[in-house]
Figure 1 (cartoon, rainbow, N blue to C red):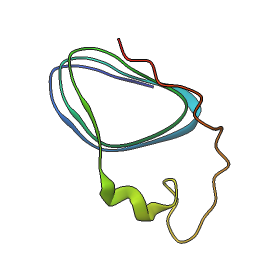
Figure 2: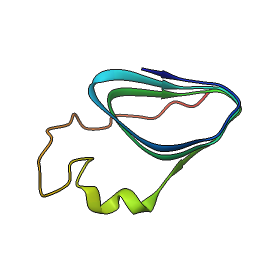
Figure 3: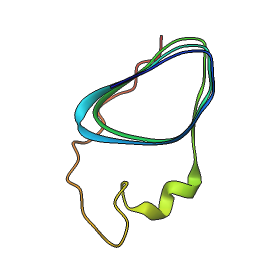
Amino acid sequence: MFIGGASNFYGQIIAPNSHVEVTGSGQFFGEVVGRSIEVKGAGGFHYDEAFDDTEGGIGEGGMVAMPSLQGVWLD
């Protein structure tokens, strides 16, 4: 999944089996769940704490097995 451009993005991306690339000069406000996540460009990434109660993107007490985060690289 590729998200890019100069506009701001407000939302949630749930793609636990996909590589997610967020790039461009726009700001990202929300949450991303992905197998791997790459954030690059002049924009910023801002986690929205409102997603803290969604249990990894699945509401109503669902479970998602996710790989652990090993590192974050920023260009």
